[in-house]
Amino acid sequence: MKKSTYHIIGLMSGTSLDGLDICYARYSYTTKWSFEIINATSIPYNHAWVNILKNLIYKSRSEIDIVDIEYTKLLSNLILDFIDLHQITSLDAISNHGHTVIHKPNEGLTFQIGNLKLLSELTNHTCVCDFRQQDVLFGGQGAPLVPVGDDLLFPEFKFCINLGGFCNISFTESNDLLAFDICPLNIGLNYYSKKLGFDFDESGSLSSSGEIIQPLLKRLNSLSYYNLTGPKSLGLEWVLKNIFIDTSKYDYNPQDILRTLVEHSSIQISDILNKYGNGTVLLSGGGVKNSFFIDRLYFHSSSNFIIPETLIVDFKEALIFGFLGVLKLRNEFNCAMSVTGASRNHSSGKVYEIFK
Image (cartoon, rainbow, N blue to C red; front, side):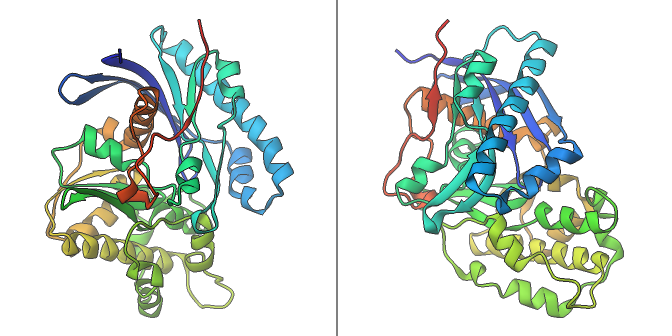
């Protein structure tokens, strides 16, 4: 008989390299799912780890394997510190997204570090992880994975949009769950903010001081990705090719690039919402705190945007990856074929059990 209540630690490390999000939550099922975030924290990566993670794409597989072990050790230490700090005694599993090194689903490739059995051994807790690979093996994009959680945990909203490294959306259309990456956001904004000596564009103070580069905006808005229908997803490889501009070839300053990226992303999001009929939109992710970006989003779209409590804004993805772990433990599908393009709905992830 399946349990009705689960206590899970969900982990999320995103492409924007902000750090590791840890969310301890209770998930309960009666006639529908409900949740409560009990404790949550975000732990920034130090400069050494930021440099390691952002350069992994250029490393050999043997070098990545070495980092994988060290990163798993880092995760285990952070988890154990979190458990000790909050005196957590009820824990069914740790559910870990890992950190994406490569994501080329059209080539059958996706790989995240931190998904080793070693994590369960070092923490002495059951771990659910490696959610993306099975979906790619079934012909899917391996992303986005959050939509099943959006659908079951936040059913009152027409759209759920996460404003993270990438902007991704989930919604139901003609009884099908649909979702995809809309466009880049913080992965580009953080990159150009660092050119100016800042880790990120706080409240949009940098981008708001720039001017839109019209030729660049036109080029970005005409990228072929935006003409594709879902399922589709973005990765660092696409960003390196299309978003990270060789400024030695163009007389662009970082503030103007930032301003242009803000306009580009707000236009792309509003275009998608206009296409699917607008409605009530739940916003989450770090981009919510960029007030200038939010202003531009309001300018371009007539949708009703809802910004929830801070815990949801900051930890919704970690919360949902915890929930995807619950679904895996129950052997219920957590990857929707209508979202990823896989050949079937399936229950994705690996379970490394610790029996106590």
